[in-house]
Image 1 (cartoon, rainbow, N blue to C red):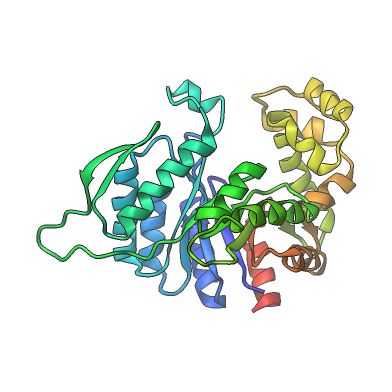
Image 2: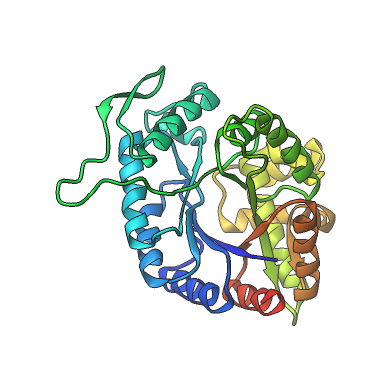
Length: 333
């Protein structure tokens, strides 16, 4: 079973490089660099990882289609492909509220705007001259324009950072893969496959499948599995406070979410989260994450893989993030 690693702000730069070294050593499929809040840019880290590694694929997990013009996004990923030819993945998602509105880019018709954006990106990647007059994207006779080297097509797959059925369907229709979110149960994969299948039925390029990857919250502690479970419980509690709509996927009653939010609102301090997490049952944690001993976590990852996730992408939590990656690398090498 191939594995990936989700690299977000919880990783220091030194931990990021160490995770990349483990991925190279053990033949991981991919490294995915997060970009969501105003914490850390994905592109700079991707470029450094692309230069540091030789075999593992490097993906954005994910960047949004609001803050970079489609032409700039195309040339950015073309540049990354120069650093790591054939190893770059463009993971693309709608930005999230309320941040999008706070920075002057409110979400509107996210699926329609994504369709236009991807249509233009794919034209650039085919090395075509692009003219497009859509509701959201406008291009007038532009293309890759190097003066001192030949302009050529680039093979950069586009993956949707999708959760809802309409974006998943769009991925099946026009994209190369999906990068499914964390804190979703194994049963969600069936839902995603159904939506993707509707899109595949509309496809015009002859493809009958797209790649399915999913980032999964994980924590391993063979000395004290309780510590690993609590690391994932802390993470789930934080997201229930911030994005209570995920409660249904975790099997958490709305009344419990309300109690958690009463203990700690949002924004919450680490101490707030610790006080609130004691209300959350272990069952909810095990439903949407992989936590405990290395054997327990490996078995849970196998469940996601059997459901149709080709590449489970490890999102390590807690104080032993690198140990978690190394433990699972040895199991699945």
